[in-house]
Length: 90
Image (cartoon, rainbow, N blue to C red; front, side, top):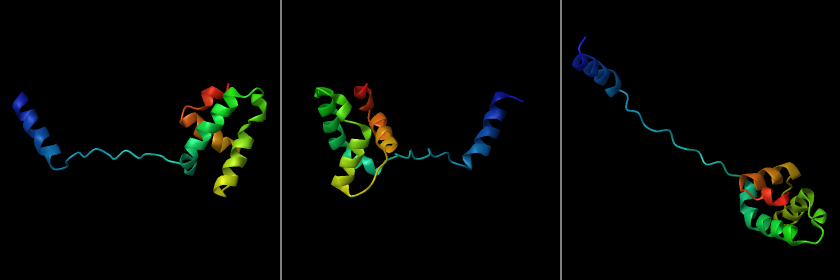
């Protein structure tokens, strides 16, 4: 087989099925609406004299008061990690 024949066969085989890129799915969470509040809470914790008073559970409960929806401390932590805010908590 010559190179031209191989290219022609490949063109016939793959010309029928155009390859379209798969759309990228942007994952989002309902906690993304509260990103600004999570940033402010994190900064308050960073500059506080006693950062132990600012826990993930407290942040989750304050978001619950503002939004009316309950979130677990793990969900809040995952959102902080996703938005690269959790590294300021250490």
